[in-house]
Image 1 (cartoon, rainbow, N blue to C red):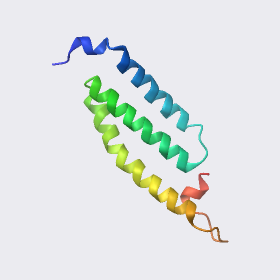
Image 2 (image 1 turned 135 degrees about the vertical axis):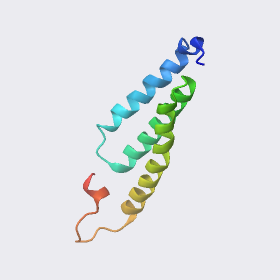
Image 3 (image 1 turned 120 degrees about the vertical axis):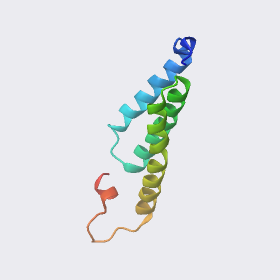
Length: 96
């Protein structure tokens, strides 16, 4: 059963607003590496919010998104370190 006092906790509200703000920020980002880093921070914030507010669908979603964003971040970093050639850009380069 949910603890009603937990919903009145202002700290959890701030975590939720912060997480939402981070997601909003990702829509303004042009470069893939900073986007993935901010997305990871938003995943952690939403995971914290979901657990703190007993919102398991939110917690599970962001728990699943963390490894995906980590994997895509590693790929973007690897791709960013490759020297530019005359070949067609890879998908992560197209997004920058």
